[in-house]
Image (cartoon, rainbow, N blue to C red; front, side, top):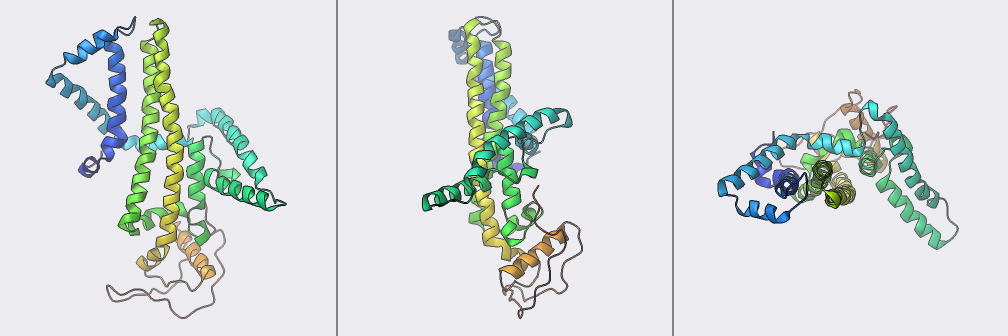
Amino acid sequence: MPGASAILTGRLLTVSALPTVACLFFVLTLVWAGAPGALRFKEAWETVAGLGPGEVFVVFLGALLVALVGHPLQLPLVRLFEGYWPERAARLEGLGRARQRRLRGPVVDLAAVPDDAAAVRAAGQAWFEQRRRFPDDGLLRPTRLGNVLAAMDSRAGQRYGLDAVVVWPRIFPLASDRVRAVVMDRRDQLDGSVRWSAALLLTSVVAAGLLWDSGWWRALALVPLAGARLAYLAAVHAALAYAESVDTVFDLHRFDLLAAMHLPLPDDHRAEVVANRRLSAFWLNVPVLQDGYLHTEPGLPLVAPAPQQPSAPPSGGAPAGE
């Protein structure tokens, strides 16, 4: 269950409570208007106008309790939208991956070696979009959202020799307040969009059942369905922004990670990659961390020792995606 801090910071309200309240109000409006059956929205308005403060409080309290209970399920919900489905959905997952490969195909073709300056720019932009939106083929997910986040997992920190999946819980607490605020804000946007999409999709299903015998009013069930689609597209764009902020954390705070571990700072990029691969492998329970720590008095910065010949990277220590 979320703590008081989640409520005070507004995450519970923006990510869980608002979608729940809005969708519950939509369903209740249909019921108050006479669903199932012919709809008379004048009756719905009269019912709303006649609600007392106690009744309004009970409705909102019920919606808030639903949001509170469902808030811990946010991560599994995002994983579901990423395309991590049970084995019985393997066929559907395969169809989704095939569709994502078709979407990825033209981007890969454009990234071929060009012949002129305009084609170079086009290929560079295509390569950039491919890196942002799609992971390597072996990590391809059946949904757009899943591919954006899988690409982030395999890309973030890679050029520094860091495995983003295993390093992220350790480097994020070291980020500056400004950087952490940006990351958390973009993560809230991602989670909120996913929750809106899921809530609206469920509302569309419930509305379709309520309006089954309501004639042309059945078309109202398409309203939350369209909203669910828009919210999902918003989630994809929010994931792209979130991935960019995760890249920023690795760019700006990777040396803070070494300092926090009391490890020497590298002399050049090659030594950095070797050291970071060792550190990532160590956190994956591979005992390859180099001997020797660098300690300083509290408050003093760590200073790199005299340059040393970097050792070869450990076998299998290359960054791995999720």
